[in-house]
Length: 69
Image (cartoon, rainbow, N blue to C red; front, side, top):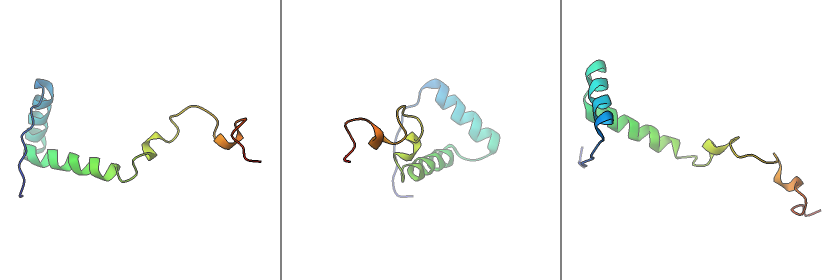
């Protein structure tokens, strides 16, 4: 590992991290690195997580005034 960062955690998150690391038997740093990897992999398709969450017509081209017909 070549980089070190310092992060201040709220008490509840620090307690969760401590308990989780102890329960599964891995270092806290490993849990944090794995969560960063999950976040990085999720962002390869940054807008896909919005699919189906925005109300409105399924095909915006059918909205009056937006069609180029």
